[in-house]
Image (tube, rainbow, N blue to C red; front, side, top):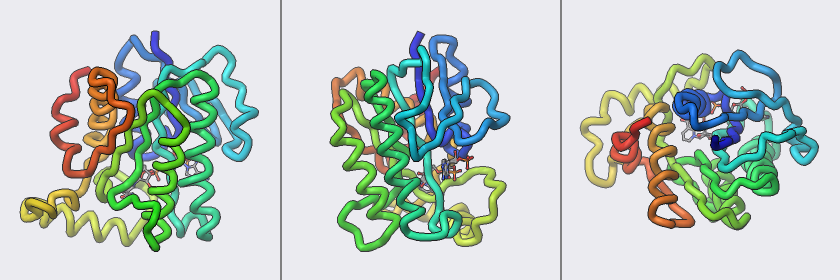
Length: 223
Ligand SMILES: NC(=O)c1ccc[n+]([C@@H]2O[C@H](COP(=O)([O-])OP(=O)(O)OC[C@H]3O[C@@H](n4cnc5c(N)ncnc54)[C@H](OP(=O)(O)O)[C@@H]3O)[C@@H](O)[C@H]2O)c1
């Protein structure tokens, strides 16, 4: 029985990951949450992300971990608060998983992630990718979706406009523009799982999955 830890399990991508990972009886899925939620399937461990080292995980030692944590600058309230979630919490979760025995880590990052970018979002995502990679997991998979297409309850007007336009013009986005097509959340989840399994098979220690690769990766998902 494999144990899989997940952070960000209550989010759009996280819920899809939980749903997909929980279908297998060969997995125990453990969700790290800041408050108990109505999530179906996984065991829930309520943690303080500022002090993950204190998280009581008992015998729930992970084989692998998935991270779909994230917030927005607007919700967080400041650049620092945004970076606390999208960088500090991501790295703290990865460190905690590694210390508890995980060999493999999957990070849901973003299209355009770039540690040298002048843009807060792209830079933070790029820094998180680099920091996770440096932790020495046997396998790290980074997934970089485009704007997420899913049933979001929270109002995010900018994202909603980008998504509405993206849905309409997606068929026209060809060649180098293909990566800007919206990424359906379940496609992101399936692609992440497939990319990890493929990397294990190929013995690849690091893989970045760009947005345009996600549809074909997801098609290879068989649970
Ligand atoms: N939105 C897009 O179009 C887009 C595009 C490309 C990449 N991405 C990236 O993809 C990843 C997944 O995105 P998503 O839209 O699925 O995320 P989401 O729906 O916004 O969910 C975010 C998750 O992070 C948790 N979280 C947020 N703030 C937290 C905090 N202060 N402390 C602890 N946990 C916190 C949330 O927990 P609670 O339920 O407790 O709030 C939730 O589980 C993120 O890294 C995001 O940046 C997003």
